[in-house]
Amino acid sequence: MIGVSIIGIGRVGGAIALGLPAAEYRIENLVYRGETDVRSIASVLDREVSVSRLEEIERLESEIIVITTQDAEIRAVARALVGRVNASSTVFHTSGAMSSAVLSDLQADVRSTGSIHPLVSVSRPDIGPSRFAGAFFCVEGDAGAVEMGRKIVADLGGRAFSIETKFKTLYHAAAVTACGHLVALIDASVEIMTKCGLSDNDAKNILLPLVTSTVQNLSEQSTAAALTGTFARADIETFTQHLITLNEHVPETLLEIYLLLGERSLELAAKQGVSAERIERLRTKVAIAKSKLKW
Image (cartoon, rainbow, N blue to C red):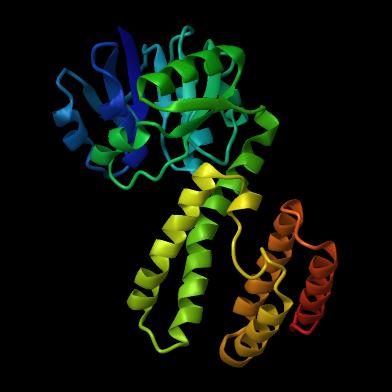
């Protein structure tokens, strides 16, 4: 039985506590800072678990310690644990943006340090275990931590992949672009659609099936092959009409988004064998339109 202590019982920390199989893992400590509903998590666990504040902890003997606090608190928590952990422990944090280097104060005290970041949105602890199933987790750190991290991910039902520590922040920027920026992009699309006289809610509901079908295409095809529409065809005539109506009805910020993504779309179109001459002509028109924006 592997003993586990979790520090920072929020959505991810609670989900990990609930998701680790009880036949193999024993949640020994749920440690929190500030006010939180940690006891609701403890009550669900079918076993004894210690619930305490970080400042009340004298020592953590668990084989695995997982810090699931906000990013800004991770280093402070690591420093607070110096001298209070078992030398055989492996310590992880779950930040996407920060690498295991933030745990450097503990490296001399423990066996291994690393990070485990689930690439999935967890809005409540109770739905976390189902969200973990089949999700990808980025595992990073020293060799021992990576080995243990991969086991934890597998036991949560996820799929682990690893990157070098120096690329952790770059990895997170990619994830933000795919997730957070996707929401922002759809919001921009909704705003453009409302200029047709639709409500925000109607515009979103009309666009969502299109977005869903695009994501489905991406699951089956390369990004280049999944591209459809005006830029996929290097359709200069339609682009010109888009430009006229966007200039008339939307702010420059939305037009800029359209043009920047159009340039990227043309790169994908080129990979699909679209006429190089048409792509170059459309790229020139996009560049001219960008040059007229107020920077």
